[in-house]
Length: 229
Image (cartoon, rainbow, N blue to C red):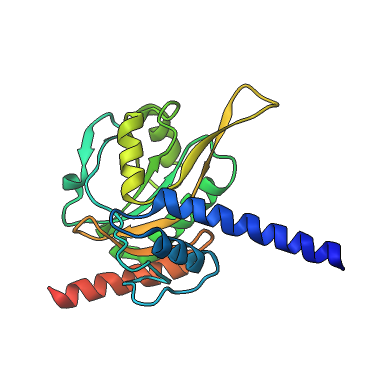
């Protein structure tokens, strides 16, 4: 029994330590480390930090702002910035084409949500920003993203451009070398972002959110925006 208690305590310590490190890396400018830690714990356990603005099914930590300016390259090789999407909504995901599991799953979910939206889907642009720009060339992205949806965009850029875009959305990613192979994988966070016409995140979806849940939130956000205009 004592061994079990020690094991549970060790696992809890590792979990809290990892969450603290993630909060330190991903905290927003001006956000205290304590607030960042509390917010990441709430996201981890499905809670809602008090006082933060609503973001779909999740609650963003107070003072945390996601989204903003970026400079990238689309799958046709054209330079794009957030201004190219002014007035449009984005369903945005950060992943990579060599991802063996979670990325195809989440992109498939986005595609299904787009189909579920019907004509409303014309107001939304599905897109993936690669976190592996060394391998994900525009041509590689063009072949990959269209497997999921004909309107899906693939965005890449220099390592510095990708890192800056990821920082704006508080995306964690890191290269993981494989001992049994010459290639590598990318460890990364896996949220889907609904970005409003102002370039700011309006809703945030956990991994494995259903297409129907995403579509329902998109409809609600579009209706709210229409009523306010």
